[in-house]
Length: 97
Picture 1 (cartoon, helix red, strand yellow):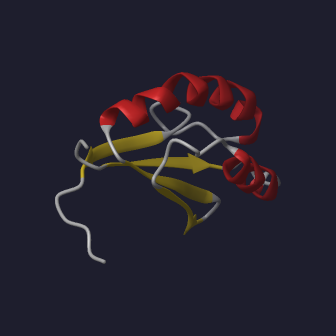
Picture 2 (cartoon, one colour):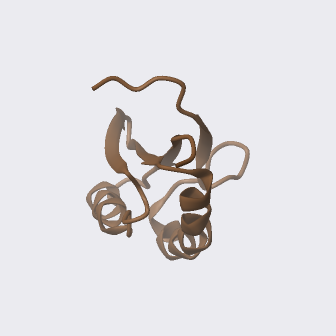
Picture 3 (cartoon, one colour):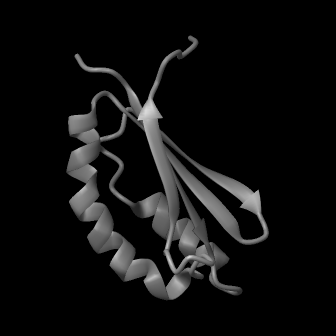
């Protein structure tokens, strides 16, 4: 078994599209994830937090994630740099429980 990897991807919903974006986040196929959450960050901004058992499991979600992102683009506001999301990931160094 490899090292756990967690990814955090932020989305900013267009005004009036908040509920629809949350529903799309909920319906994304997270079956490759060990666990996942949707966080409200305030001011129409949300984060999807996914933990994977390995980088390989994460890689499997990248292609389908890009297709899905193309589908939800009308619901999201672009960030100042023109990106649809702000994201980062890393190897989990410690996990309790």
